[in-house]
Length: 78
Image 1: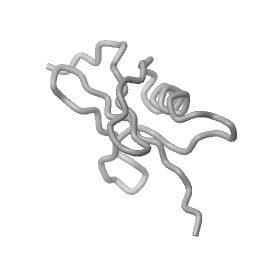
Image 2 (image 1 turned 180 degrees about the horizontal axis):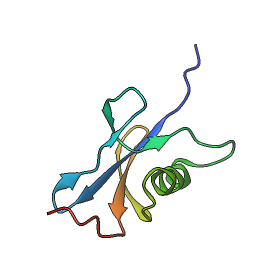
Image 3 (image 1 turned 60 degrees about the vertical axis):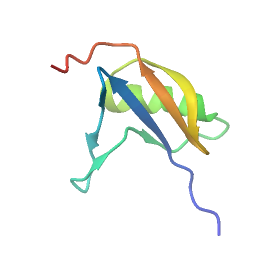
Image 4 (image 1 turned 90 degrees about the vertical axis):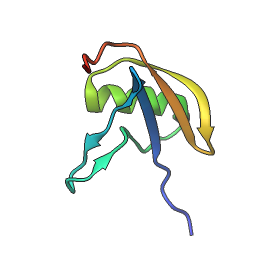
């Protein structure tokens, strides 16, 4: 069975991880499904921008299909 691919970003800022409330009221990492022909890095950058308005740069591969996203904007977490 083919399962849809979901690409998730671990956005770190000052030792904290960005989590978003999803449509079920659960906490989730930003991310989503790649557009046809889109690679995983481009998916992360696009999804984080769409969901948060933040510009990020991808970093090291964390596991199989997950990439680390380096924050390129100040979230103002204190």
